[in-house]
Image (cartoon, rainbow over all chains, first blue to last red; front, side, top):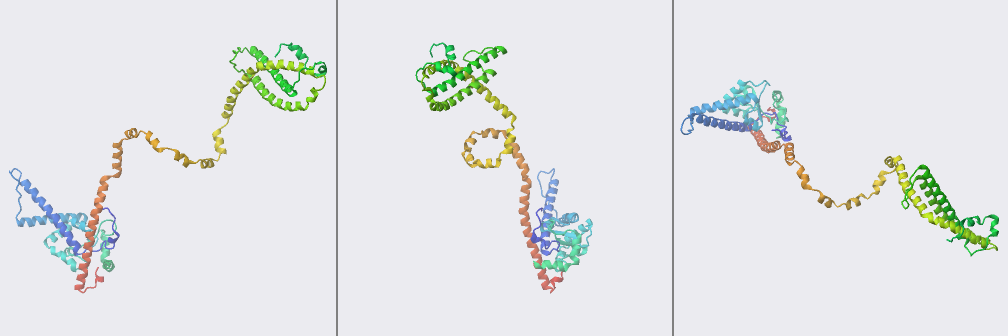
Length: 179
Length: 268
């Protein structure tokens, strides 16, 4: 998105994102993961059908399907978090996952966070109650999700900004209450 | 013109004491007499000049020009010019003398003057006839001289003048330009007629339309244009979704804070 950051969106850049934004992002990511999964199944079936007379769509068993879906989700989300801090769902919703202490993302931490989300997705709900809007996964892996529309208007995206947000939370919140 | 002896007539010109011996002839206007005298003197000068020109021609080895086609040589031109001038002068002088002559007519009306008058008149008429005979030639020479000289002189003067510089130095171009009614001039121009005369097809044929179109498309960067417009529309939709989600986040947070009786200002 090359258009400049709208003036209206500037106040909350770098603020912690709430449950609504994150849920929508997760929904988008799940959709993307399912599309990838479908393509994988169709592709695998096509490969399996080579040499046969007709194309047969071979659906995995439900247990395999759960595992396969988990692999796809973890591979998809873990890879993108480790690379840029945002999945496609995060990107659409203008969110970014950052480390609270400003440390660099470690790939394994990104994958581990993705695994935990796949196994305990309900952990996300903790951000509703948490004062800092952090989920269980965030608390375990020292991460936070902030608004970052990624157009250079907000100073979000830098780990330091997250730290500042933590240390001067009340001031940041003041701007939130305006809305 | 009669066939009297010219020489004796010239000798008998009414000069000095010889006036008394002249018999009284028919009556003559004194003014007319004066005009005749001047014309005659001019005629005599013409004859002299003609003779001189001829002599010069022979001396310089210039071939004799055929009659009727008078080629002006330098001496002939000078003489002719002088004579042309003299002819004009004589005409003017004659008028003046006519006036003077009328006032002095009593002199000639005195007794014993008739003979002198008659003889003098004859002589004058003889000489005048001579002049009248040669006059066309003299006048032609003068005219040819002027025709040859004036363009040469004008050209010489113009060659030595830098008219452009003079005009720039001395003319107020602004004033001149202002004085020109340009609107009127432009109004008189028939643009339609000019356009009609322009061969538009030929002009269009000379334009490489393909290259031009290619250049325009390159300059416009159509793919970028499409990308930008698509992006801006998409961005607007996405922005609205984001605003909605941020509002929802706030609403949820406020509700939770109220349920938990938490001071929202303390929440980071």
